Image (cartoon, rainbow, N blue to C red; front, side, top):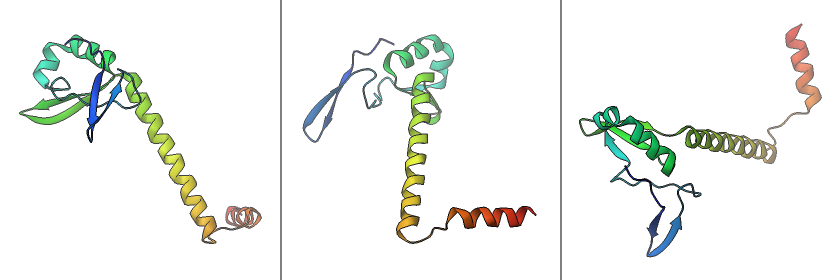
Length: 118
């Protein structure tokens, strides 16, 4: 597999250029979907492709997606995004509770905890 130089994504007639590690990484289905046997026989090449492009590779068995392989940095970015989304949702829910009066003073909550622990 050759290293990617970046690519152009066409959206509604307008094209946007993205680098190898740009803000959004789109799949190139001609290079990023491979049979599992290709991965077994060329794992070093696939790992190099993962590092060079930052894109995951879908591995297939009998023509069906069986696994997704990605480099450690890309996986960490995915975990970070999931954590941020979870925190943002928690904040949104808390603000919604506040707006709808589903709140209690902290002193009352701590008193309930003390009562339960006795």
